[in-house]
Length: 128
Image (cartoon, rainbow, N blue to C red):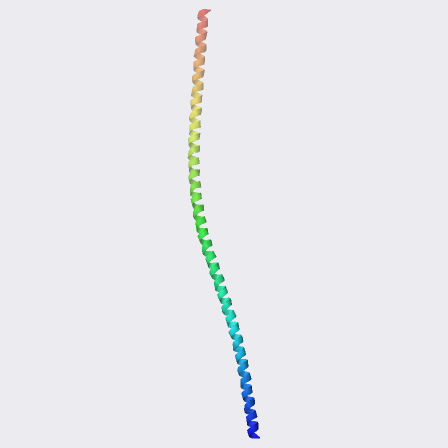
C-alpha cells in the first residue's frame, strides 16, 4: 500500500507539477502576447512621434520662410514709405515754388496792366 500510496502520491505530485507548469506556460504565453502588443503600440507611438516631429520640422521651416518673406515685405514697405515721404516733401516744395511764381506772375500782370492803362490814358489824353 505504501508503494501504491507512494505511487499515487507521486503521481499526484507529477500531475500537480504538470498542471502548475501548464499554468506557468499559459501565464508566460499571456505575458508574451501582452509584451508583443506593447511592442506594437510602442512602434505605433514611435511612428506617430516621428510623423509629428517631421510635421514640426516642416512647420518650423515654413514659419522661417514666412518670417523671411514678411521681413522682406516690411523692408520694401519701409523703402516705399521713405520714397513717399521724399516725394511728398518735393511736391510741397514744388507747390511753394509754383505759388511764388504765380504770385510773381500776378504781380507782373498787374504791373503790366497798370502800365497799359497808363499808356492808354496817355494815348487817350493825347488824342483828346
